[in-house]
Image 1 (cartoon, one colour):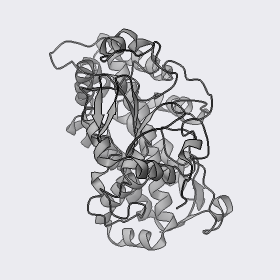
Image 2: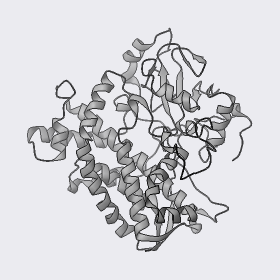
Image 3: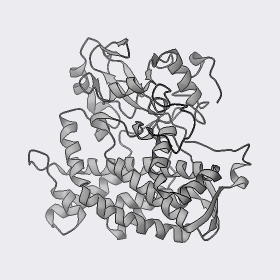
Image 4: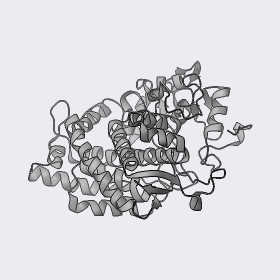
Length: 427
């Protein structure tokens, strides 16, 4: 692994030099101090495991209002005083993505999170898991015959989207439109883009429009389907949410659930295709697949980090932070902290504590779709192994084994491949 000599010269948030490999930078930050301010935007980078977990669990002193946007575009007014809680509430609606669950704080977050958990009950997840295995085979029927293919657009993307569509009860006749609007059309800018792309207040308008129609229709005319369950779900106190509250929760699950799973599954296939001995082991010993998935999440967290804003003066890892400090909890760095994970840059399918990773966060904002992502990854990997005898990286596209060329999403939030060309031998 390369080393970073001049931390001060690197702009993690606006430069592209760390998109391909941010880990030497993360290590350099942690080696200096696991709670360290970067100089370009005044963001305190939390790269130590214990320190990251402590911030995730501290919703009393930290607000999630900037969770997905971080230092951009900045807070609308100066953050002055030793308790900025009132300022946050007064200006929260002016922040990008302020209508999304990850940016909510208690008690609003508590109610909406409970609403979400009513949508993904164990019974519904079990029903959805049965669909997942059938869907994997359906997509592989098209993806495998040519003997090679681009994995993200050919399998992982449609797989993740259609799983969420089934979970939320999107009618089958509408799923093609969802594919067209959310998978096939090119996306520009977006959350966490490096460079100067601007972000709209809510990039989820298509989902808002569609689910508003569904919910309003099912409240007028209930049916025996998942969408009716969505439309009639209540808050913990029994009150009926506004239509927009249900829509926001569904849209968030749809967008966040897709992105994380696509990155997880594509990274897992890259790791497996790059290591023939590991692939052979997984083919022989399928009970290793769950820990393989956890180690993939640890080594290449689909989300690089999450942001918090300190409401009051607070101490993290022995470092005093004033009220109004923007903090980035760097999942991707914490998951490679040698204080928690021995030989952290090595992929170890037998790692006993792999599942201690924080790829899905911790605390009140931990990813509610984590069980679903794990189920999708396992089904996709199992069926690919069942239906092939060998999976390889395409040298034509990615170059020879000693000089691979991969491209990664140019964002400071997400970590994942933009393309993955695989070759395979049918079983």
